[in-house]
Image (tube, rainbow, N blue to C red; front, side, top):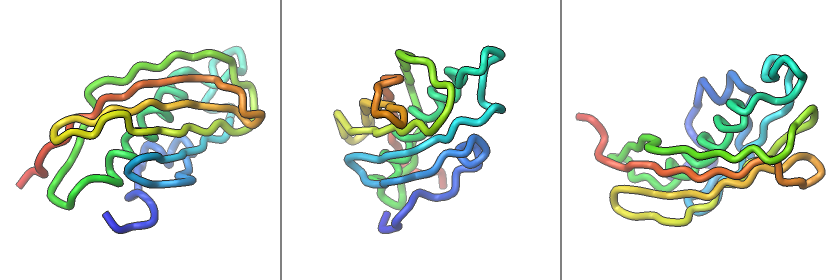
Length: 131
C-alpha cells in the first residue's frame, strides 16, 4: 500500500488500539487496559482480546493488498490463557499462509511483562474491490 500505517479503523480506535508496527508479514498492535473494556470482575473482556487478535491480523492483510483488493475475516479463534487486570497488551500477527484467495495468521498476545495472555488464529478471504 505504501503508507506507514493502516487506514483509520473506527472500531479499533473506539477500543483504544494503536498500531505499533505495520507490514505484510507481521503487524503489532497494542491495547491499553480500560475499565470500559472489562467484565464485572475487573478483568479485560475476552471479546476485547479477540477484537485485538482480529484487528492485528486484518491490518497485516491490509498491508499486503493491492489497491484493487479487499478482504473479510472468515474465521477467528482465540484461546484466552491468562487474565489481564491492567497495563497494556500487545498482539503480534504473523502470516502463516498468503495465497491468492486466503491468508492465515497466528497472533500472540502478551502483557507488559511479556507473559502470553492469548493466542489466536485468523483466516482472511481476499477478493476484488467492489466496482
